[in-house]
Image 1 (cartoon, rainbow, N blue to C red):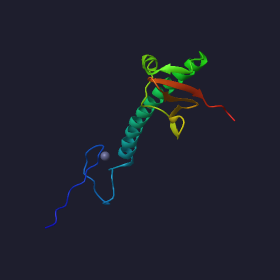
Image 2 (tube, protein in one colour):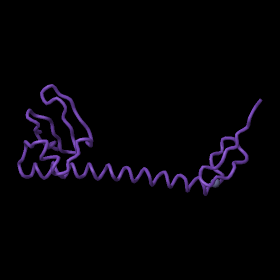
Image 3 (cartoon, helix red, strand yellow):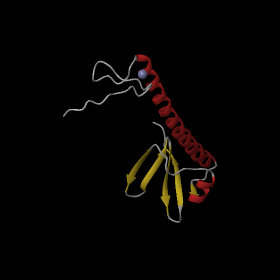
Image 4 (tube, helix red, strand yellow):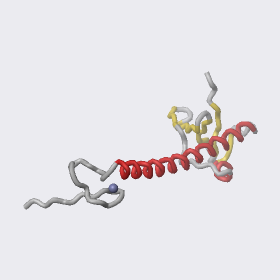
Length: 121
Ligand SMILES: [Zn+2]
């Protein structure tokens, strides 16, 4: 026996009538649903962006102070988050080198990091 499930609009809960591929009851509901989804995405992106910006700022400040070698603790104390970076590279000498925009760092012995700045051009 075939059972037909009634589809409902995810925005207002009204049953969907008509085409079976219809997802929303109206353009209004579709737009309102998509706008909410978009604002959730924007919120997540802006949190990530602000952490990356802060990481970049910390690296920039240390490099401006000519602190090319810093301890992991010092970075953490300043609010650095090791989970966020924009890219990384692997090379045999430096092993993993992580970047926050134009600033990079890689691990040295003794829980320290060597900082660097990518030269433009
Ligand atoms: Zn609806």
